[in-house]
Length: 123
Image 1 (cartoon, rainbow, N blue to C red):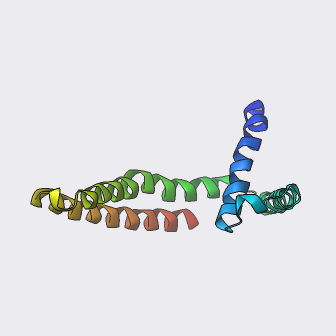
Image 2: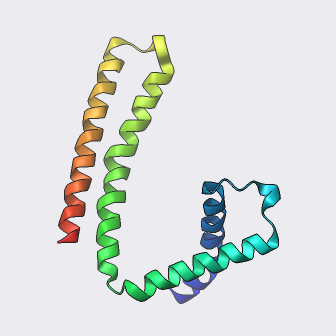
């Protein structure tokens, strides 16, 4: 496990750093070595601060399980199906459009289940 953590962390961290810079809308040509180093230092500091304060990992696991598990099972598939039906446009049959509406009901149910799971995790 330790070897896996040691060698996979840099790969995951580079993606996190680049994603952060993308969210901040910093163009590729402005990403100098100095900016990358400062961003790396800031993100490592933030990660270390969270690790210092969050000592109960079961809390993190329960929250992520409630949110990401429900999203993976209920929310994302129904959104993808609804998007596929919308992309069909006029080619979609009435039955497919009705099924798209049912998919959105499943989506709402999934969001409610995620909220209940998150609330239960916080107790």
